[in-house]
Every structure is written in C-alpha cells, then in structure tokens.
Amino acid sequence: MTPSHRVSIPTVLMLGAALLLTLYTSLARSDAAPPACVDDVHVAADASAEAQAQAQAAPAMPRLHRHMANRDMDIPTLPRRRPDGGRWRIGYVASGEHDNYERALRYIVDGLQALGWLSIPPIPEGLTGHEIWAFIAANTRSDVVEFVADAWWTPGNFDNSRRPAMRFSIANRLRERHDIDLIIAMGTMAGQDMVKLGAPVPTVVASTSDAIDAHIAKSAKDSGLDNLFVHIYPERYVRQLRLFHETVAFKTLGLVYENTREGRLFSAVDAIERVARELDVTLVRCDARTQGQDAEATMRNVEKCYREISSQVDAVYVTTHVGITPLTIGRVAQILRDAKVPSFSMHGSEDVRHGILMSLAQSDHTPLGLFFAEAIARIFNGAKPRQLKQIWRDPATIALNLETARLIGFDPPVDVLLAADEVYETR
Image (cartoon, rainbow, N blue to C red; front, side, top):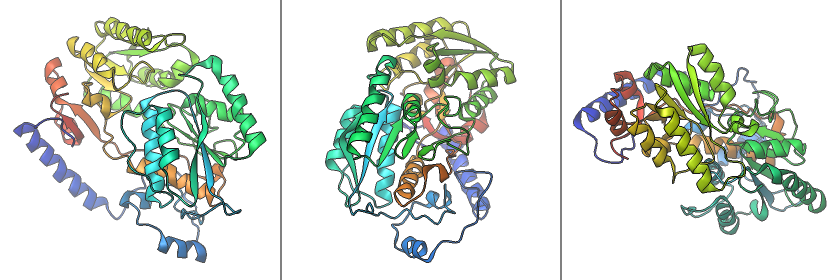
C-alpha cells in the first residue's frame, strides 16, 4: 500500500485484513507457486558444471527472480566481457518521449545492476529520455558493458515522417562502424523499425501495447527473427477491462485515442474492441489527434475528447496517449471526477495517484527489470534472442483512489478493497 496521506481507520482495518489474507495465501502456495513468467512448456535442462560454478558465485537475486523466465537454460547470467576482451556496447531506439519508456529504461538498468553487470548512482528525476540516456552513458561503471552515448535514436516525438531517415541512420551506423552489440528498442514504433531493418544486431523490445498485433513478434513464443527478443504480456488489456467491468458494471465505455494505425496500436484498440464485444459493452469513442500537433494542441485535443465522452458513458478507460503525461494526467482525472464517471487507467498506478479511480498496481518493478536484464545477460553469454522465453506477466494487484471514489459516489466492493495493494486517500 502506498498512501499519499493518512488513511482512515476503516481503510486500515480492511487493508489489515487484506494483508493477513495475502500472508496466508503466500504461505499456502509457497511450495507450488507458478513462476511469474509463464510459458506452457518448460524444458528440463541440466546445468553444465561451469554454469553451476558461476551460479554459486552469482550476486544474490531478489526472491521473485528465482522463478522467472529462462531459468531452465544452461546459459548463465553472470557478467562477462566480449570474446575480444572488450565491453559489450548497447544502443537505444525510442518511439518518442514517453514516461513509460523512461521508466522501463530505469528498470532495465536497475536489473543489470542487480545482476552485477554495472554500478550506477541513482538516475535523477525530471530528465527527458535523451537526458536519461546521456546520464546512464556518462555514469555507468562497468568492466563488461557500456551504454554508447551517441547510439541513441528517435524519430522526433512519434513523428512518422522521420522514421525512414532514422532507420537509415541506424542501418548505416551498424553497417559502417560495427560498434553496437545490442539495441534496446523502446515502444511500438521503435520495435517495428528494428524489425523492418531485420534486427541486424540483437534487439530487446520493451514497452509495447501489443507486439503481436503490431507485427513486431510473430507470436507469444516466437519473435520471428533470430536477433529479436520481445516482451509479451498476453491479454494485458483484456484482463484490465474484465476487472474494471467486474468492479463497475458499465454498459457504455468511453475511449479516447488517435484514430490512426499507430494510434490504435498505441492504445490497444483492437484488444479493447474484442473484450467490449464479449462483455456486450458499447464503446463511445473520440479521436484525439497528435500527428502534426505540438504538445499543447495535443493536450487540448485530449481534454476536449474526455469532456465530450464523459457525459455519454457509464465509465471511461483511460488509454495510453502521447498527450497524457505525468504533468497532464491530473487534468484528465479532474474532468472525469467532475463528471462523476468511474475511470480505469491502462497506464498504471501513477495515474491513480493523480486522481484516476483505479488501475493495476505497480508497487514493485524489480521483477520486470530483472526480466529484461536477464535476457540481455544471457544474450551476452551466447544465447540467441529468439531462444529466450518472451512472456512475462506482473502480479494482479489493484491501485485505488478512495478520494476519487468518494467524489464520484462510487462504493468499492469489499473484495476490491481487500485486493488493493496501493490505496490513495488524496491526490
């Protein structure tokens, strides 16, 4: 639980009950808990003597990591230099500036630090994506890995017209200089761009809304390219919407997104449409344009859309959108509060802290950072990216804003309160 202010006594009692229930469940399941990363087939493999020796010398892993992806591979995660004795060199491609990407990059770096590949001081808050990359490149201390300061690409801020030139620049750098060993591709457009290039070097794709629908990965179990590893979270948004519908029995649902191919992918519209049909829910849509708009115009479009739909629906699903940032989400939340409409954020609990009614909680990102770091470590130790299991699901816990619930006249069901891992009394 992460309250922003003191929590009321009834809330404390309910959350105390939730804690006891959680502890009881954890003890009951400790011997047979499924891995946090799920795949249908686990191939039994005996570790080599070398791998066993390395494992004994490995830094202590957070407990959750012991049951995660690719644990049955005999390829270790311990730090090692390139075969020529040099350091592994990492580059970065982003779809644009977005706090999801910046947060994911921080988690990956934290994961690599936990695995012993590097040390780095805390990354300052309030930096842009490029500034974060520059800080990482300048402040990473490692004998085995480096983040190359000028190996950073983005097509402006989600600017389709600049993507061909960016791809040409990446391809030329890789072909002419041969100085990048792995690329982190952050976001749907970045993943698509690296796939279009054929993933000429090992590529790790993170922070996509739906990598399969976006034709980045061939399937959940097969990236489709030997040099490609993609985080896959099956049915993420279907799971969110089902939870929201169980909590708020809505018949009409508001949806704001940019009605372009890229905008639909970014907001996972295809998945939302599928679950809406399954639940017999009517979608009320609004097209909030971003292409060709500056940041202020984009946000005005977003606010206008939320005002329009909030008077027409029983609930609103707040999708990921370029115009919604940590600086602007509070304005969207206030619009929905004023309209007394229940809301659920696709993005996560940060939006709940700013006034959205609920989302899935994100109190601990250590397992996700380790998921990516483990993949990178195994690639540097000889694994083909395509060999690695791509599926990772975060734990199903709820973030809830009780002040928003009171303001809109919503009484959360007891089971939702018990399942809430992050509860906010005020924003």
